[in-house]
Structures are given as C-alpha cells and as structure tokens.
Image 1 (cartoon, helix red, strand yellow):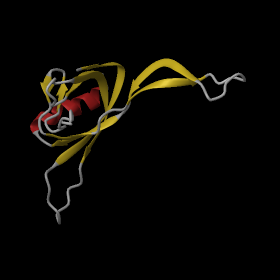
Image 2 (cartoon, helix red, strand yellow):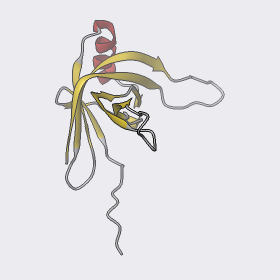
Image 3 (cartoon, one colour):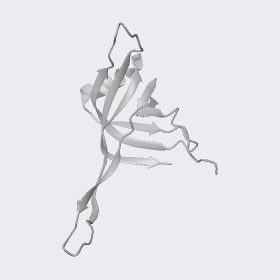
Image 4 (cartoon, one colour):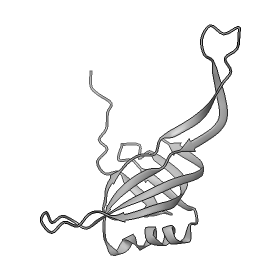
Length: 134
C-alpha cells in the first residue's frame, strides 16, 4: 500500500498575510479541549465530558535573524494580539490560523569556538479562537 504521508519541509509561518522569512523550525502548538470529570457512583469507569473550552498551546519558532524580524520584536513590545497562520506544505496547502501574542524573543547562543548562523527563538502564545482548513 502506498503511504498518504506528506513531508513537513516547506511549512510557512505568516504574520498577518506576509510570510516570515527564513523560518528554521516550528514547534507546532498543541490543540486541546478541557475535559470535565463526571464520574459518579453508577460509573464503572471514569467518565468525562467536554468542558467546552478550546486552547492552542504556547509554541516556539526558530528563525534565522534578518532585517525582516522586526515584526516579531514589535509584536513583543506592543503586547497586542496579531493574526498568524501556519501554511503546511502538503498538496492541499492546509492552514492553521490563529491570533497570538509574542511572549518571548531570544537570540540563540553565539559561540566564537563554534560559529553558526545568528538566529532567534520566538515564543508565541495563541489567544482566542483558531481554525484549521484542509
């Protein structure tokens, strides 16, 4: 049987509708829903129902530092939620759209004994609703 798997290479992170240049890695946000335990004396097993609250968890993105990185610095300083989108490299160009605040920007270690590209580790905290289209 032929696999239906597709490569994750080529995933794009967009800020508003503009791709963020030179993304190295995206630690994808965990999408989750609260569960409320409703186990009672008639239960044979633990029981749960949906709590009705959804969440996209905090995640990090690695970016080669470049002049276009000013957007994430400005987002950190402003503290305002901004529209972001992760566009997958699959045939359908699936998208995960969300609003997030930037909660951290960290330059990756610069080591004179082991030169490497100057890079940033940016932490995003999604807020509010999210959508996935396939």
